[in-house]
Amino acid sequence: MYVPIGGIEQWIEIVGAGKPPLLFLHGGPGASSRPAAAAWQSWTDHFSVVHWDQRGTGRTFARNGAEGSGALTLARMVEDGLEVAAYVKDRLGTGKVLLVAHSWGTILAVHMLKRRPDLFSAYVGAAQIVDMRRNEEIKYATLIARAKAAGNREAEADLARIGPPPHEDLDAMRVLVRWADALTLGEGDPIRPRPRPRSADFTEEDGSWLVRGLEFSSGQLYREIAAVDLATLGPAFAVPMFFFHGTEDLLAPLALVESYVEAIAAPRKELVFFPDCHHFLAINRPEDFLAEILARVAP
Image (cartoon, rainbow, N blue to C red; front, side, top):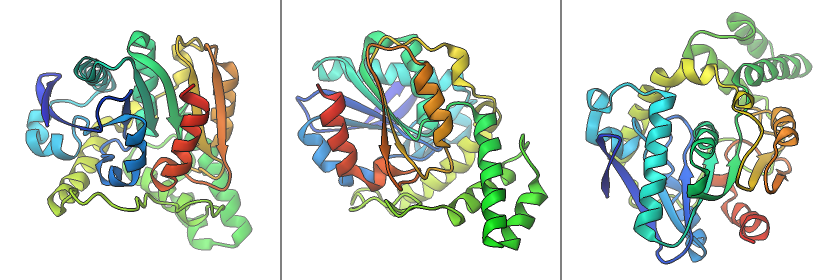
């Protein structure tokens, strides 16, 4: 359904009823979680799972277009997210919202938790982003080292061409993603998102708008994302904080998450490792992801 959020109509899906709400903040920006809805069907035995196509994403972007979406800023997206969470809490009437986020969505989530902890029962960050400048520095150094060790001259040349961070354009980001995929280790899950089964109601037209939304949202938010350092928001949180992370995630280096979690003060905190897994573990390992939520977060 389309719901008025932040002055525009935004697409929200609620799968399952009468259970504690789980709001998933997708990554990207612009990477809708709707293609994975069917793969998460077992989640709806325990939660009312909420998918939200953020401003500039998927069906929300299809409804409003670039002009109707307005300027995408971190502040605007956080306001949208809080409005969605309040809507879900009020509509379902089954208690506070379990906030689960992936990658770019984890940036939104931490800001939301700081602003309105009263809306949320707990937080699960998958592929948590912490400090984007350090993130890219670690990624770049790791890729240079792996390219040299593998004798991959094409990778070395491509990485030398963009040089070390900071980078000023999306081309450099795409180069880093390309070689992070090519030079990764670990066989715990696919490198790229591969929901199984893929949602039947995610149409060819949805796929077209997903691609357009990714391009639009990345262009709008790139500079703000590049400047993110969540530690500057402070280490204190009023809700339990959980972090699920693939040990071979090159897009969100584990070392930064370990340091961030160590500094956090919360009613409870825990960092859960998924050995040999990569950036998209929530999508590619949905049953294992759910099992960890039920064992650690649900209590």
